[in-house]
Figure (cartoon, rainbow, N blue to C red):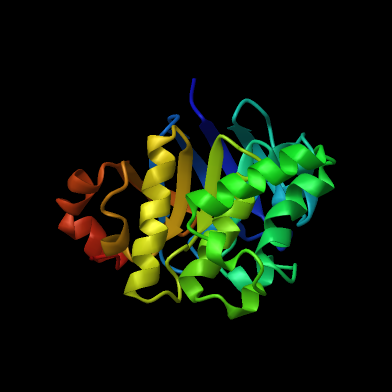
Length: 242
């Protein structure tokens, strides 16, 4: 069974202009799947639909069928969807709300009323996995860009969702930060997690299993990096040459 199934998905924000047009694709469990395209191609909107932000927090006209980890985000609540699909937004600072790294990790489980001993265990596991143990008591504002991104990824994964969605996780990071994030992403694949990541720079995601290329809200291609890279005319047309 696919981890993500999207069939004939179309969406507009209510102004009549479609942002997504008849989008269909599937993602297998344990796959790293990249959504790429120019600004305005519908990448972030698609992620917001997969994690339930649309239609629960952002309204619009949506048609088609979306299934993520055996639930339909449009029908499930945001809390239930968060247990199936963890979302990490592009701007880490906008997602971090607590005054210590440890509290930030505990925030999601506390809101779901997990037992305190389970929360402590989960926080310790995330601190160890993401190399954040030495900064557990620091204000996240004092972290490097890479550390902030790792914290937001860990905060999404602490609820153990089978699907992780990352909106341009390399944005604004130096080379060291990019290496940290890529290592974290590839580690999730080895754990059997499905990772969907939005990116506009294809050079940064050659390690992915497949790329979905969007153009004007529709699917232009969906294939392995090697096969898409061999289609220079397509990449030139989409202005996505790596």
